[in-house]
Image 1 (cartoon, helix red, strand yellow):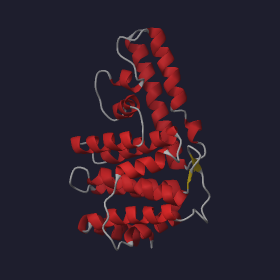
Image 2 (tube, rainbow, N blue to C red):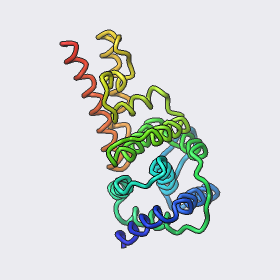
Image 3 (spheres, helix red, strand yellow):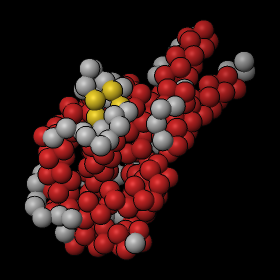
Image 4 (cartoon, rainbow, N blue to C red):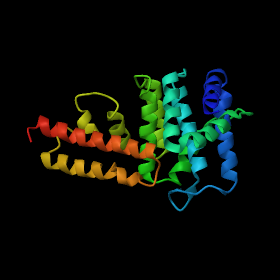
Length: 243
């Protein structure tokens, strides 16, 4: 059954992308209008909560925006999203989510502003950082992050109320350049050795996997990836400076 659902999902992405993406928002609107009954609320922000079901549909909505950003649908990006959801939620739950995703009857526009507002009020900052990291991973799944995808990621980041410095830090984890290590630690190359050490401690604390202990395995894995990038950046700077 699960393979059939994924096959239908792939077909609909290629043949009826507007309707598919529109249905997600329609479902989200319906979810917002009703209570979260039946779901255990696990993500909390500024006094409000979001159910796992709503969170997954929001995440799919943002993933869809990234996949469609450059005007084409990459199978490798599709496969990445499918694999991520299976790892995060298990086949049965992912199956149900994608089945709902495919039961499309209306075409509605996806608004990153509306989704961003909804999530920023209901999720912690570190969770939204992990969402951005996940979306960057989708964009890179086909081998490169295009300019169109990068612009879409920046817009989503701003809608999630993530700082520009945090955006550049996560972006640097996916782009190779001479000053990547400094960008990851959110400092300038002119920073003193003491400032580098302080920046490392700050970033290690921000991206520590323990901050996502309450989330599923896929999110914890993503947190570990970010944490590892911070460690590698610090070690690279130390090596360059002969420390």
